[in-house]
Length: 432
Image 1: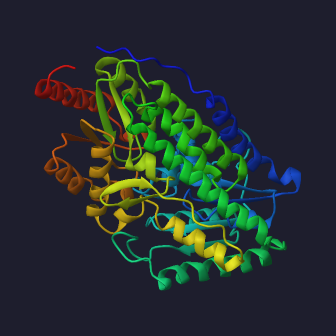
Image 2: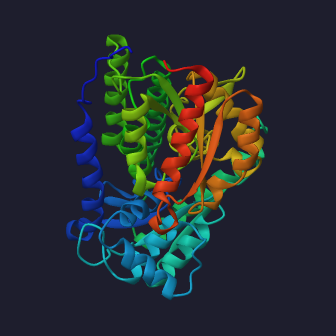
Image 3: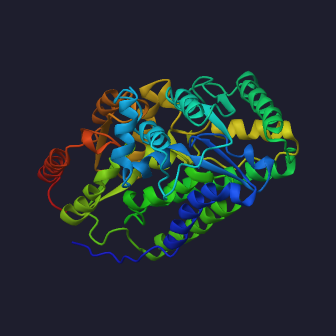
């Protein structure tokens, strides 16, 4: 067995500090005379940047995941269920809303209420999640931008009508934000934020491309802690600069043959949010089988911007810098319509095409799919994806679980199922 050289990421501590700073800045915003706003990881978070440098976001999905793994998690879930919310709605939303209901913030102290909400509609849960959050936080001003204009290229045309539909909503939102906050919108600051958004998501995509190398320089468990910064605040300079630094470091790892695990023998791929309460599975696979998960459409494409070119899944190049408010909105809309996690809301075939491309380009031996009870959006079409992957020649297994409700997670059952899959792979191809 080949023993590869490994070493820790030099920028790991910076990633931890940026994540901590995000939650601290939000909590203390009012102490500094600043504003707080809340929305999902897909919100057009460059827009509030135009209101000034002291406007801080709270991104719902990573916050919900953090709550689920924190001491307040069980209490938050019980509180939201006592209010009659169904257990089969988004597990992130339930943790987030439960945190409001019990008035406890994940870093301690009471839940810091937002001054306004800005949410993008793509997933069917998002608008209702934040409509409820707005009501629970005292009927705060809320703005929703519908981006569900149909499948993006190459599965659908990127027409002027689609872009103008989103741009018009952005311009209306900017006008209304000025009214509710009493602030003047800084167009130049907004343009810079749009460029930071593209920079963050482009360089994360380019970093993911580097994982095509053998041995893989990153494992997916590590990547979970790296992509999350773009879900928190991708349109700020420090996050954009972090991804440029990360790309440079990972490229250097590839050039020097630095591996994520020393015993890489198998290359796996997943498909959606993992069960956050059971990331030990990834460690066990690496230690017992020498199996590295190179990532997934979710890990790459939740915040990385890609496109399909001649059947390949490749990072999209940054668009030219806009000069006006309207141009900046149009660039922001066009860039986000290439987000790989959006097409599968229109057809599972789109997701299958991207996953098969990733499996081929990243040299995948097998695929592990998560039938995620905690996210109906990501679980939609998974049975069809499994059949498509099998037809394309990739051994595939699925397990049931939840990304953010540990009660819906049979750890031992999942472990046994995945280990049986690995034993099957070894029996079919022989131990490497």
